[in-house]
Image 1: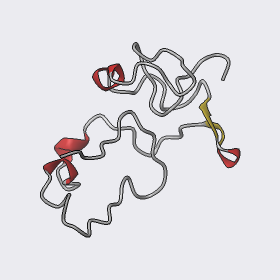
Image 2: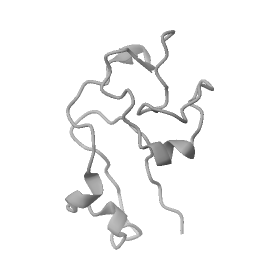
Image 3: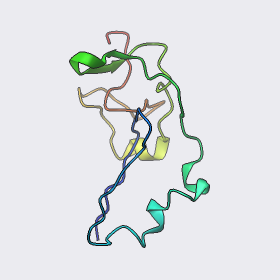
Image 4: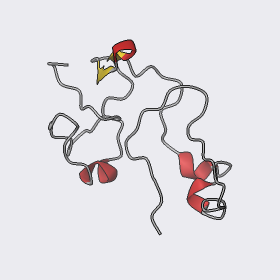
Length: 103
């Protein structure tokens, strides 16, 4: 069975994820046990991602972003390029965009 799992993501706001589990599909899956703090180690919490211009949906990051070099290296190998085609196999950033000096 396939389950949605976020990889190298930046979330802002008060809720990380929220599921409407009408069919009971996720209730028994230990990956979605938000009370198990062992599942959520090495997270970036309450730090500014410093998006270029979030109000215009320009979500590249600035050089002082908390997302830089914070992605899981093993998970990043499954997504070796970012949304713009930039390499993200080493020192990957969280989110859809890898930081470059051109951001």
